[in-house]
Image (cartoon, one colour):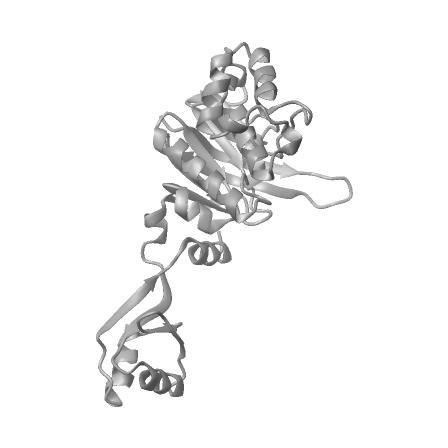
Length: 304
């Protein structure tokens, strides 16, 4: 059973004195259960509106929405304990410790204190749990926010830009936490982020939004399959002389650790021919596979 299903979903915003803006345009989106699913889209793509529809914060104009196999918004009261979300900066009492903040939330939800200790262990904050929230780093605050979202052991966890504003150490900590959550198998993590390299490192699957539609979806490797960056890596005995030949032929050439990188190559065989004409014979030529960022930019530049 998919964790999320959206079929033919449309949402138009109408503001007085301004033209109507279609945020979702007959959107079809399926998020399979398990692992980490990256959810990407440039500003105005409909990503945030999709999340708001899923959480019942707004109603679509048309279409069908299902969470964990149940219709939204009708079944949201029954689903509330199965969905966790961190969609904004987490709000806690600054003068209370991390543990006390979580205990208050747990008591409100009718959960045992033992669950607080479990989620503190999951997000690796047990040793700092008695420190006041106001003394936490931004990365620790984000991890406590994720802990709060995990209190009810949700089947679906929605994280909206959890690494936003963090320093490299904080980004690493949150990334490793998301990896662990995805590997657990009991929770589907829907990770919304503009940090494409982060998505590529932690996500099993990805959906890319543009102009209110999902324009690409599937395992990250499949989304990247067949998309070449246009660059090639070369290994050649005389790097300096080969670089001079290729530069004179109009190519953009740069060094790598053990060879050369030739950019925007339309026909790799032509590189081989140019070098051979000048007495340089390749030891290796390898096309550089596209990364998620280049695929994302190429996809979102195309008509939906």
